[in-house]
Amino acid sequence: MQLVSLLFIGFSLGAALLLLLLLGNLLQRQAAINLPAKAAGLVLIVCLAAIQLLHCFYLLQQLDGVHSAWYLGLLFAVAPSFYFYSRQLLTGCVRYRLRDAAHLAAFALTLLLPYALALPAAFAVGSGYLLWLGHAVYRLRRQRQRFHLELLALAVLFAIALAVIVLGFVWPLLSETAFIALYSQLIGLAFFSVTLTLLRFPGLTDDVAEAVQAAYAESTLKNVDKAALLTKLDELMQRDKLYTLESLNLALLAEQLGISQHQLSELINTEFQQGFSRYIRQHRIEEAKRQLLDDPRASVLAIGLAVGFSTQSNFYAAFRDIVGMAPGQFRKQQGVG
Image (cartoon, rainbow, N blue to C red; front, side):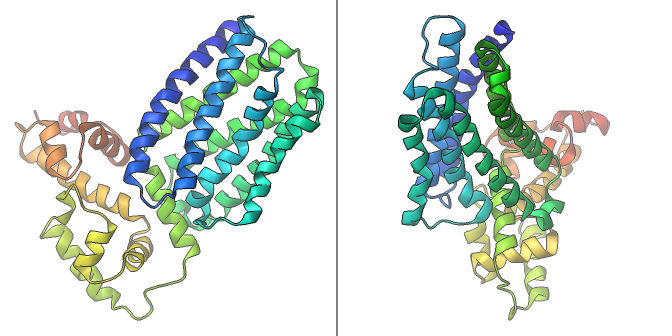
């Protein structure tokens, strides 16, 4: 079990570096995510990586850092940092009040409680945040038609978090080494799940944010001619192929239609049962499918860039997400090339 745990720890540390790079790139593109949420995401990754590093030292009998106040502090930091990162994403709440400081009060437990009580207390605090997460996701149930595999990926992550909470409550029944080993493996699985989800669904956070907006916002289309807007939108997509612009975003398309960003977001959400990001990706992929068949000599990369994707990896990820296979495989399946 120790060897398996060390492998998971090694993967976690490598995945943490990758996620920091992915998160940095993601947060640069998403101005809608405020600075406190961005900082919380970075803190979450660093804390989990630091916990895994202490687990590694313990299992290798190099350093007993798991009995230190630092270790307890890291445990208590995980749940609040996850909350502050995901709150805006899952509820649309961007305002911070003085009472939010109460989420940091649990750190006092690391100083006031003995280790034997502080350790299960950290997992008890985590269970409260897990209930909040379940409630937040449940409130998005009306938007679930736009998520399929994405929701499955989030469910896997939720199950891992639940397993961590259960482990925290049954730890007195296990030896300390077994507890550390199992905890390391669960953190490793969480890193694997998050990394795979972000690579498989690069637009997941955009889709979730748009679903949240649709779920919580009041209608902004009461005095708008939706039929005329849909006709103009179709012209921009089919005739002008506006989706091929790499710089196309919600603000630019809304300006072309003469409406606000909120109105455009609601229009696409209600009429097409999906968010703006996925709506544009689907148009790009449909055009890419046509070009893949009509121009066998064109490279896959050239086609991906021509339809509006900025990189080959984004094109491949979107194509797999919508079509279920790689662009080259699609060509071969259609007997082209």
